[in-house]
Length: 279
Ligand SMILES: [Zn+2]
Image (cartoon, rainbow, N blue to C red; front, side, top):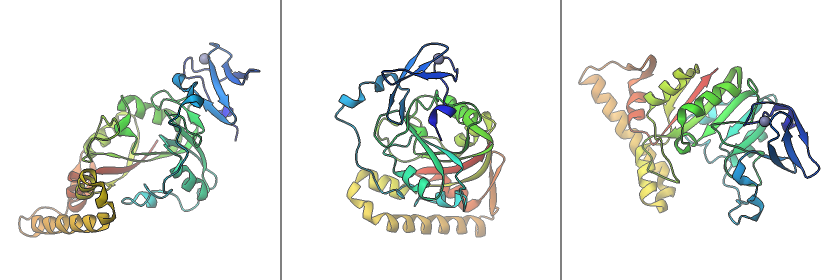
């Protein structure tokens, strides 16, 4: 798939481009020029000097790093059938590598340049046409943007009708890497609803013990399975007491969304929230 086919100008929203002799993508309507480096497109204005930057990421992390958290993996289809997927905020591109391996056609985008990203662009003003993607994956990105409302309206715009959002975002995990908006499950439901995205699943990501433990002492990372187990034990015990001693109902509601009391309690103390929604 040629990226240029799904691209629109982030300045004027036109989708007719010419490629200049100096290898720029030039908008035919507003004459804005964007650097084309091999197959990569650079729409972020301060990316044009990236090749002189020292901070270019060349190494990748474990492609399954995010997917091992909570029920994220189960939100993917069994057969992706070359569905077109936007990996928004793809970072070092390791998630994209995994998504390609399970048969998605992946477009990776991020604000910062690195060699594993297809399109360098602002997630709050995406250079893609309306109704383009079958799937949109956004892992640990929401907390880093400056305007969550704009981000969600762009997600809605670029997804095809019936297209699926698969996402995780920070809630109680510590401040990190310029994170701004750590949002509760109820806040996520509101962002989805305000942008006409229909919630499908809502579940806890990693737990508060792991998030705070590893945040305070990164060398505790190998103990994460133990911290998770301890957390799960405490939540299960608490939920048991609430149901059988205090007579609480086994299920409850977050806004209009039904969750079990155990999920509700886990969400209250989760480092991150995992969710999926349909346009
Ligand atoms: Zn333009």
